[in-house]
Every structure is written in structure tokens, then in C-alpha cells.
Length: 298
Image 1 (tube, rainbow, N blue to C red):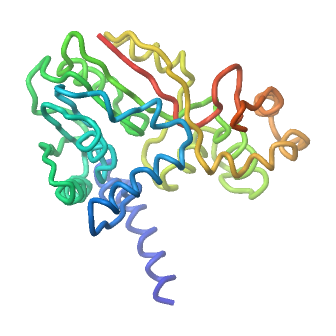
Image 2 (cartoon, rainbow, N blue to C red):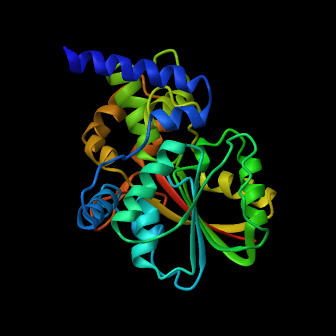
């Protein structure tokens, strides 16, 4: 009974927080928040979490930034901050987030590794990072930009602090994914009958990081690169990583294709899938996963 009441209270807190914006919501709802007693436990979790998204760590590596000034934009509870501190010999490590709670968790986790970083709490509306212009070599932002209410402001600020020869590694949600075309469009909306009154993209928002998540978008690669270009960046789509949720729901693929309630767009996407040597679904030559990864430069 107490567990049931706790779940209800948690849901109410998230709903109320979502009305106040992203900072309030992500303070209540932190992704992948765990407690660790040692650096070994922390690293075991780091590797386990990356394994839940096959291909992710190859597309968004935390090694190879020796001697550089690195910023983790939207660090959350610190998974990638730990990764950079352990697997790169960085000159300086910065981490920013809109959630004070997330920053405190990240700080405590980093302390287990006897590593240091400078943590900054930023305002979600202003998105001002307290660093000089052209002061950062490498910016890592994973699973964050698709939650920003004003993506343009964020990209402008990242452009400001990035050195002329710097790079930004980005992961945002992928429109061309099993998550959108099978999990949301069929499994949730048709099979389970959830989000019936929601559009496809609103159902997607409600499916990723809690039903009350204020902002959660997905992009086609050309669409995201076009937005980045409008803010001074050139870039390329590196590929996508797939989630275990997507892999687990692949068994519903043929039921979805056979269901006349599924729209032609989703049916065609699912019909065109092939599989690579690892058994991972591919669409038009790219892994059909939710984590689309990009590399941007000025």
C-alpha cells in the first residue's frame, strides 16, 4: 500500500513540476540516478548503461580528449562526467545542468573517483554558461538538446564558448527509429491503446522520459543538421544507437505491418528494415535506433 501511495505521490510531483518548466521537472525526474558506494560500482554502472544502447559509446566516446577543455552540457547525474574524468586526461572539465539536484548527485559520484570538475547551474530560459567566449575545445551533450524549449538560444551559447577549431558531440532523439515507428505508433498507440488523443509527436514526447516531460522532440538527420547550420555550425550525422526497449519490441514488427490501423508511413518504414551482422535493424543504411549522434564544428 505504501509503495502504491509513493507511486501516486511521485506522479503528482512530476505533473506539478512539469508545469513549471524543464528545470523543475528534471529536478524531480532524474534519468539513470543510482547510488554508488565505490568507484568500482560507478564504473560498472557506466559500462552497463552504455550497453543498454548498442553502438552508443562508439558514436559518443569519452576517450580521446587528452589535454583539452571539455564541457558536458546537461550532465544530469554525471555518467559521462565520470567517463571523461576516467578515460580522458582532460586539461579542464566543466559540467552544467538546469537541475541543482542533478549537479549535487554528479558531484558526489565524481568524488568517488577522486576526480574534479567545475559544476554550473544554468537558467533554462537564459541558457547562459559562465565561461569566456572561445574557451572550450570539446562539448559533449547527450540526450539534452531535444529537451530544450529554445534550441536556438542553446546552440548560440554553445557556439559562443566553443573554440574556432573545437567540436561538439551531440545525441538527440531520432525520428527514423524503431522507437517512433513501432514502439510509439503501434505498441503504445494501437496495441495498448495509450495516448489515443495525442498526435504521434506528442505521444513520442510522453513516451521517452516520463509522460509529463515538458519537451521531448525527435529529428530527422537532415532536419537537425539544417538547424545547426542556421546557427553557424557545419556537421555530419555519425549514425544512431538503438535502445534495448526497441530491440525487445521488434517481435511486434510483423503484427504492426499487418494491422490496417497503422499508417502507411510506419508500415513502409517497418517493411524496409534490414538487419546487420549483429542483428540490429537498419533503415536506408543507418541503424534505426532512437539515439541519433552528430559531430558539429564552427
